[in-house]
Amino acid sequence: MSIKAVLFDLDGVIVTTDDCHYQAWRHMADEEGIYFDRQINERLRGVSRMESLDILLERSHRVYSEVEKQALATKKNEHYKQLIHKLTAADILPGVMPILEELKHCGIKIAIASSSKNTPLILNGIGLANYFDAVADGNDIQKSKPDPEVFLLAAQRVGKLPECCLVVEDADAGVEGAIAGGIKVLGVGAAAKNNKATLVADDLSAISVTNILSL
Ligand code: BG6
Ligand code: MG
Image (cartoon, rainbow, N blue to C red; front, side, top):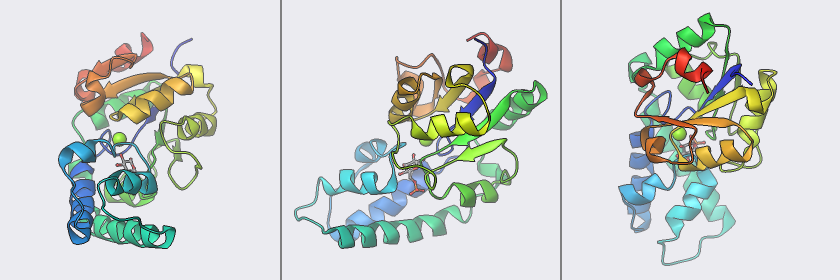
């Protein structure tokens, strides 16, 4: 069955927010005296804010209550929002706009499927708030990647069956989620090394609609 919709992850696929997440978590970890580095940060790719906090707290020497955890997550997010406030269209990753334009031109639906609750803010910052046929994000779902919920919702919102969709992901959790939802997946960036992906590429500049339609 040929591809009729492409469901794009946002962070690390459309726009490079990775370093802003790292800086904000790092600041919070330093304040709490918790060890945190870029290797741990890689485990947060695609994972929800509260689950990311739980991963970060694995290195903590004390137990945090739910109320304390909420406060830490809010603090991290306030800092993160200050950092992403500076995002503009110049932060859109290489190859993204050409493939989006080509897909639109060919009548293939395009959607965002992201774990981030900051999706509206980011899409606004980069000038793509009204660009996609549908958006499904962290505000809409109960279970974050590797659960397929956000992908299935995005597919539903563009009115296409999962087997007619392609997910584009930079996170291993996202690759797993797509597979769990019965959706083909293109791994880019950090997921370019993922051998479970249907197709891989370093970034979207290496991909054309012809590649997508041949899947
Ligand atoms: C994902 C990121 O897109 O969104 C994760 O890859 C992040 O690193 C998650 O934790 C949740 O983001 P937010 O913006 O809701 O804190
Ligand atoms: Mg991502």
